[in-house]
Amino acid sequence: MFIDSHTHIQISQFDPDQDAVLKRALEAEVSTILVIGFDLETSLGAVELAETHENLFATVGMHPHDAKDLTPDVLKTFRELLHHPKVIALGEIGLDYYRNLSPHAVQKEAFEKQLDLAEEMEIPIIVHNRDAYMDILPILDARQGQIQGVLHCFTGDVELMHRSLEIGFYIGIGGIVTYPNAKDVQAVAREVPLERLLIETDCPWLAPQSWRGKRNEPAYVRAVAEKIAELRKTSVGTIGKITTKNFNLLFKTH
Ligand code: NI
Image (cartoon, rainbow, N blue to C red; front, side, top):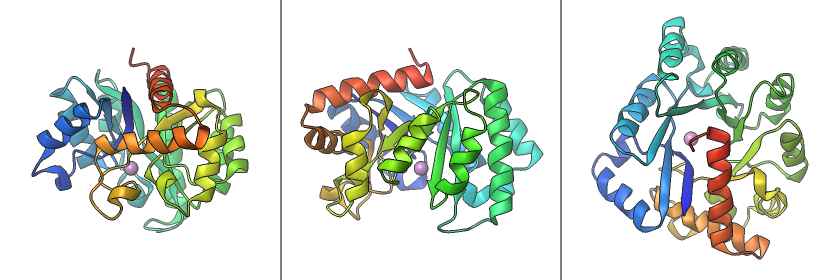
């Protein structure tokens, strides 16, 4: 059994065939899927979808790209949604210094406000990071012991992985690990302690090598698990079992 810990199956790319996508996931033994919000609309969409499917859970949060949209009203809505039984984390939140769609100061303010909310609600977080480890890690370090979560789609090197582990975070590995040139991510996948590993697709983006450039979907998380198993010289079943256990522990779903 596998859990896809990061998907966006609530967005329009999945409108034509969402049911078929969910069916293929079950056929690939992907038992649980986390639907991640990244603004108000997609957060509401994630909750709505999770309400109608037993094996789906949701998160709510404002992505750094849209940091300026985190108004007091939106924050209030997120606070209310965090009480929903199917909402198991806050995110994705973080910093993105690659696309820089919001000024850094605005991104940091939105990140800190949502970290405050996560602390207050005692709920784990899903962290988005792009070219911003130098700022994200000290921010999370300052709250060490107060907050837990996953650094999703981890693309740092082994040294950054160790720093992330020290502050208590899980490492989310996605389709990039299957790309031939992704040496850093492969090294991290080999060396991360198994009890801190989560697997994900980040679909519809970042499809594994066999489907690269096409729409990604939760069934393909199996290809991520297979690649990690190959790198670690273990079985895909072991990766599935341990990452499922980790997911349930972090998000308290069992
Ligand atoms: Ni995402």
